[in-house]
Image (cartoon, rainbow, N blue to C red; front, top):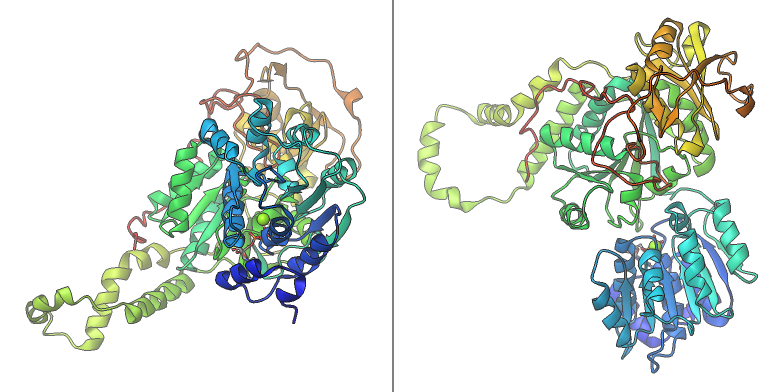
Length: 608
Ligand code: ADP
Ligand code: MG
């Protein structure tokens, strides 16, 4: 067994480690700490979330800096304020026996003058988010010209969030001969580029297979008709009464909507997305950490840096646009040696995405069934029974016992139990007793939900919008649905290219598609739709830019639509400014009325 003692750390650190209760160095720590202590080298270290990377770079940095000096010697860049604060806190714990250590966190949304003052007091180590850091360097508040060590933590996330330019600029103020230590969960080509451009012959450390999701996470998927998605979510939650979860949605609007519906249905839920103020986000995170919230509904961007251990389930209410993002999502659970479950709710047409994700995580998904109403009732009953068994008796009740006993004197124990459970349980049971099976059997077509099976009778369209317009396939599908008013399953085989895309609908909807798209604009540009010869067989698209037909200029519409899109694509911060409006592309919101019919279960799940 490898011990912390054998890694070459000084006594002050071994003492701190003992205080923290760390028994044994994790794999990334075993591989990284001795290397960084012994050599002045650049490294690229690839390891999943929750594997202990902070300590892997933290201890070597703390041991190598000169604590007598007040010069800034180490810089750690990390993607979010939460992570920034967390790293700072950890470093302080790791270095608690280092007299004179000053670690300062630099991040947006807090007073810049306060932060500048802390820096002035002499910080040997600065932990910063790129945006605020760049700002403060620009204002001459921070000098990093003497740093010896620079950590790029969660490099993939920082690049995902569009910090490439900021990082480049920050590094240009740092010395050439510093050591750069890059940490990342995944190794997309952008990270490889950073390694090539900013690092000198970095040594590579890989923990586990590259890109592999944390092994303590089980991956499950549930196939349901798209319209049953929300019902499915509720059942998954109900089947796990102790759930403590992050529910991922693709857009801010869906995030808000799903959270509101859950709250209305009596769940301890809240939304976390970019439209909330920092203050609101802090409050939500605080409630989540203290378990007042059991279901945190979040966008990918907002969920970055959620660093809460013990999350039992990650629920992918919708799959992310970019499947690589799935790794980040599922990495929120199964942290710090615990096990976790990542559940994905898909509609039939998304099965191919599961295959693609399996390739990335190099693990198989377990196909699972949404539990039936009866199963859920059973689960809840036993949960209630075990809760009762574990509840400590409140003796304030004692004085009232004789009177209560009088009221209940005619019932024996069994009857009392039954009555008691009925009080707690009837509403719940009534809700589920007539519930239907939500599972879509494999290999059969559900009525009304047309997946790929309908291609015989479907029409393929070309549309002059694509990824360059900031639209991933799901966004495009949403857009088509908003304009045409078609249902989730009625628009399928959506394939987005750079400047154009394809989608299919049932042949019966062709007229509707053509008519509703007349005169619709996207950011000042007329949307053009035309029938494509391609049947939707992936991979052999005909035409390209050249096949765009002349615009048949329809009626002008809406003026400047810029910024009205509320699609929050994961990974790519939306261009343009956000606006309050959630106007859809034609000015009418089809989202209204789309809300599934949810029988009231209010009060079923109250705050404990
Ligand atoms: P990462 O940066 O890889 O996502 P962290 O550095 O945030 O992971 O560590 C995750 C959690 O594991 C933290 O709570 C940390 O205190 C804890 N931890 C780190 N190293 C060890 C260890 N050797 N033994 C036990 N717990 C550890
Ligand atoms: Mg980390």
